Image (tube, rainbow, N blue to C red):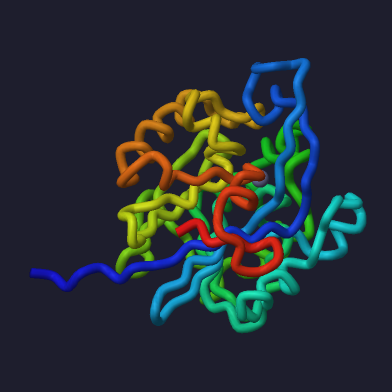
Length: 259
Ligand SMILES: [Zn+2]
């Protein structure tokens, strides 16, 4: 018999927001006349011997350019639970949108785990320079990652791949061509840090994506795949829902424990 899998804790770390958005933007084509709030997050997955971070957030320069409301440098938020960004060794990038990848420079000793398909699209495919993609992309973070290609600090993932005992990266395209999520063994079973497979919990509940769609057919298949993987649906987490901050125990300012 193999030894039991290690159990991890998952923390949501809010670094910007709230931002008021039309519901139709976070829930494709629904409630054009209504608004809702979202936050920007990164996540910490903590085991006995390993801590890994999911997504980099936004660095101060871009935050200032965009005048991001409620912004705090992710480095300063993480330190509230004792995570020193400069000491982070493992960073999963779910997808290469600015709010998830711009802050790569904040983690100067991290190894970045990204789907090769996602990297090739945003860094190398000319289609990524077309307006609908360009508006979600950021040249600074992309250049930082591009520079790491061929070094030990950039690990390409292809499809579903185990990362640590009890931590698996799952290919989950739809929102972007090569988005990946993180399946984690927790005290309540398998949970998924799903990033922008859903902006809010309602995306999963209603099986309606956000309006930022690279491939709708893949996205619907991704919903089936993630729902089949989690131990229960409340363990499937979105990328931007304010409930991650309000509905879970707060362990430090702007940080909650999801599991
Ligand atoms: Zn996002």
